[in-house]
Image (cartoon, rainbow over all chains, first blue to last red):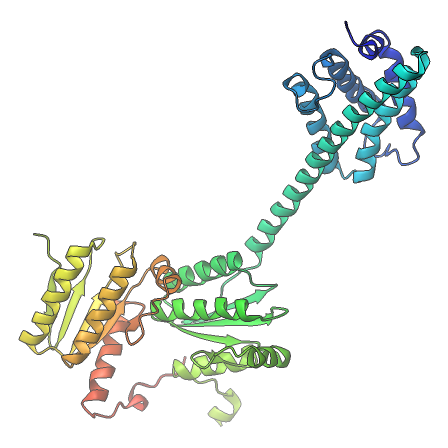
Length: 285
Length: 134
């Protein structure tokens, strides 16, 4: 025996679509600026079509059944595109949940027996809830992907190695240092040391908001690697608060040359290279 | 059997490792080098590892060993031209090669060696002589 609700849905697909669209348009949060009514209608039609066609006695209780693959695919692509377009989670949620309202309304009109109506409504509710959870997952995943991409981009642009003088490199670090970033910073710095044959590298950490033991360890690692290559490393831009934390944490920076400012680091780099900056007016007189 | 050549350059020994080291080769090099220091009475050893792209803890230790052995035999060791990847690997392995001097290029390595030998012989380094303004 075929489930009554399924037969009803298949028969009254058109009306369901109209009701659904009506519900969606009635919602105040509808974003006409992000999606046109026609697009919304095509999208909804496609989804409803897939759902009604695939719905059967076997899979009505199981959102994950293979029969719903097409439905899930459509839902996923809808939520991915919505996440990219900048819809809020609420709007995407309402989109799927308003389908439930439409379906339940039709059931109410067509099933007269209260007990049957209750059972069918429960089933449909469960099914659509399952779909909305999936939509949410897809939506969030897309959002997270966007964030990950941005993180990559930030790492990429925030590790410039500057040659400040012949034989002196400077690397201003801005933002928190984690393991992945330290790796990139270290690689960039070492690569540049090889390319330019610079003997001194200045790591400026004035843009690092906080130094904990992990960050300090990353810094020490970078310094050791630079030394192994045969270059000297100076850490500059140590703010008073950072000096305090370093001492409180008991981090040993005694093997590392540390300077308060980039200027004093540069000065000591000049001294190491036996360079001298002189004021022309005093020399030539 | 494959061997890494050890060249004599005045009172220095020059070792350029042109292939990726494997364990046996590294051990042979260690033995050869110590023999050579003894035979030539060399004052300094310069090891060029610019062509070495892969290193493991064993190689790291061998390099450290060579430096320590040379010092016992009264010769200074400088490792030059280490690749960034190799430096990172050594640091991650926790082998910062304490006591081994390093330099960026053979040229700079030679300078470091000469300075060290001069210091050891008690000759005063006169930095003022080659002072320059950049």
